Image (cartoon, rainbow, N blue to C red; front, side):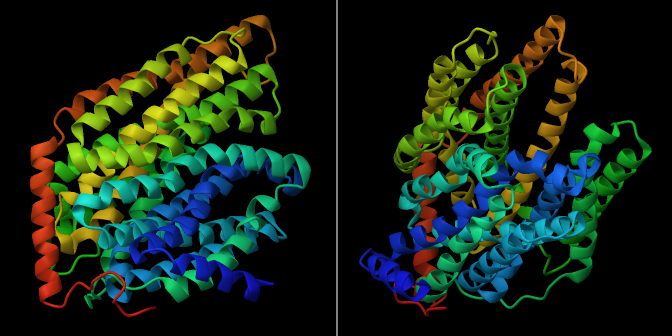
Length: 502
């Protein structure tokens, strides 16, 4: 059966121009990876029941997030050293194997190890996929391409609850992982056959000591942030983890600034446009998670609505994003980042204000319409900082920039979500309290999350005013175009469709 499907799919793909063919190829794998970040949350209760692991169930998420962060940092080196297409294919294969291992895990410990394997593959897939897209398209076309590509990154978290709730309710939590396997078995051979290298291989040495330092540092930081809410922020273990994480991450940065071939080129953060765009992108993503995390919790916790129903109620936000992400991409190509970021995040902020004032009688239709409008705004505003951050760096720094942007966003999310969770649990009633007063407290806690997210969006709108507008964005596109032409003339950058196949 696989031998019949793959050639047919490959034949359809071959009729597309190479750039778009490659984009749809990497979008398939990226969608699978990003979907996994939210789909699994719907099965945590069932996993805990099956393995009698209620006290440690958060490690199903923590192990994945930690492995993801470490792998993201090394993805830039892997893509530069072995070729982005080859690294992408192997990472996708690792994620698929990890998914299969999760689905058949006989013990809770095995499941945690398999989740870490998933995280390693997933952490490499996303930044390398983005680097491939940036390589394939001219600077003036990147926004349009990333707009379509971002459908996978931004829409998958909204689709996750629908699919996850349906699978858990009907056939069990193991299918949350098993569903990835046929997609991976289809995507890996098609990708290996059709995806071509688009950038030169840089045979620079691997900084093993730097990797060891930053790996321990990131693990300490991410575990501390993930577990701080359950262990207590004042707990000695959390304080030690966060302290070690900060010290080792700082040591890694200082080492990277001194040595000739660092694992990650942290000097990129000295580029003000890159750093500002990364901050805008990270804060915007953090605000989106208020909707992704707390709307389902509120509907299930306060209204006892089934997870599958909640998933369908969340679907309009994904539809809204899918409609406007390509529009947002075209806007950043033509107008720069300032206007689309401001318009998009203003729409989302306008939606979050009524979401911060929900009552027990607010209709589900009202909530669904609001998050649909929010999805429209997200699609318009989220592509701009993503594109402009990479357009701000040199053509030779694309792989490093996409890796660092993913790590930076991951850390910002971990810190922001940890703070929001602490505020939420400080306001929420005690678990098991079903009194009328507790219901009021619970509603206030959920509404407070959207008030926090609203003010985060206000900060994003202010920061967006300092991002490149049309004239500066065009100058950046022209500079990058000249760099790419020079690389082609020197034989260091291949034309799309004429490079060596993997």
